Length: 224
Image 1: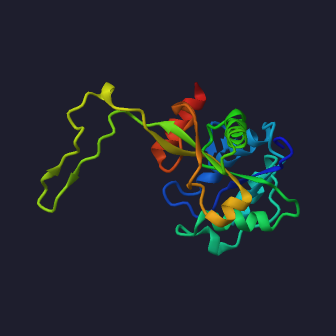
Image 2: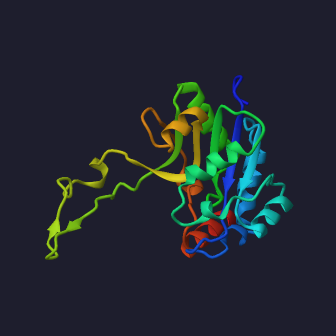
């Protein structure tokens, strides 16, 4: 709870991941991937309840064995590559009895986030009166993108000759923590919207596992 507002987190993990098959139950530094998010949420000082939403019986069993609350299995239409994550969130909210002001999305693919990141994002959202908060990481300074036309000629950006140090700071979402007021989220149907604020996390806690290389990087960081 924050102030007099109740907060629920939803850890999402589906069974049909393609980049890294069965990644949510794959061991990372001695624990299944999804267990890292369950553990971080359990250490939060703000969350009133955390549930795991999955369509997969094995993921559900693994989550329960690591202390996860899995009150239902998500319908399979909500577990495809193209299914909007907002449908999963609203389904979860509508299938619990309690009422919450804030909803927190924790993707199982962000194992390096810690409880302080979860609580910090919630507190920032609450203290600023923002309708939503999204975790970010500082983007690399050398972030120019170059387009080509149909003949292969480069379409160069205006700042291509600037030194890296001259570029302003920019941030990118790291996928670790998403917070929103439930009523706003129902109407907006996404976390990115007018008035949202950003909670900045360090690069070493911002690995989002989509590939085998991401898995190796996360494991190397955890071993340190």
